[in-house]
Length: 155
Image 1 (tube, helix red, strand yellow):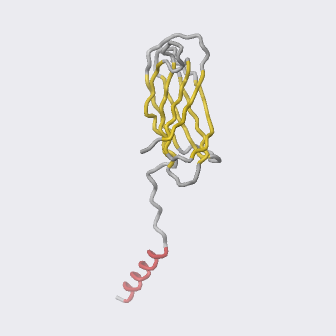
Image 2 (cartoon, one colour):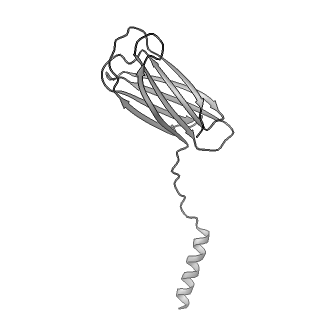
Image 3 (tube, one colour):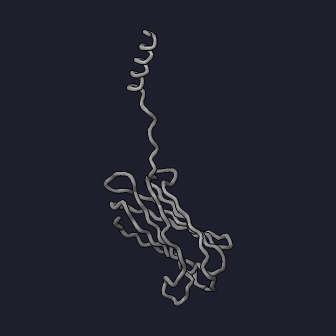
């Protein structure tokens, strides 16, 4: 009986000293969500040959401000890839980023958007999302381009 009491006491003391494994957080430091992706006339040239991708970003770590590296890729049906990136400083933990891929919806097939975001100095991105969609094809001789707006959002 003494031996059982001894081991119960040791087990109790160890449970107080040895830390329990940390619970994995369900939140990524940066969460990205492709809210919508579609084609249209974003540059006002009268042709529905532009791709618009709307992406919500939630920064899930505390801080007065954050320096974010943002990258977005548009993969065309023929396999060509358009890559664009930006650095920005934000005080708002919730952002809506609207990407404009000008004159790039020019062929039939699936278009894929890849979005990545990470904190300044991080080797790998903290947030990622993707979406694939199929706009009608078109033809345009204008050069491709890109634009972006970043707006704070609530909720």
